[in-house]
Length: 92
Image (cartoon, rainbow, N blue to C red; front, side, top):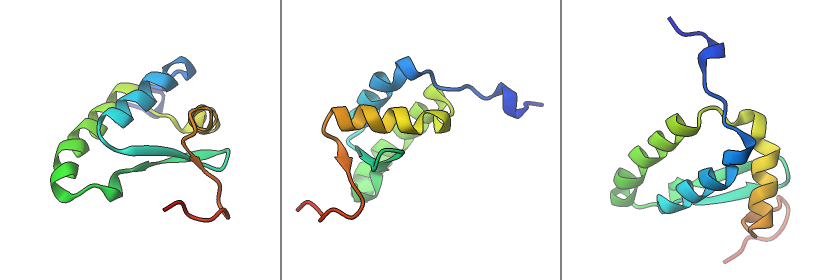
């Protein structure tokens, strides 16, 4: 029986590969403010999600828990120009 301590924690050094892997699924990944990020899988068509969904599940399993790196992931995404600041007008 596994415990919470058995859960793999993503390493900060893995952030660039994690972001690249998410982008490769066809999903957008974007920092929200300076403390979090979102994966834009909701914008995919049903057919695209059927392909991306299992890939995202494998990414989640491969990298493990990322909650402790939310700020670091957001900072990395901002450095790539992948960010949205709450309160700013939407980009069309």
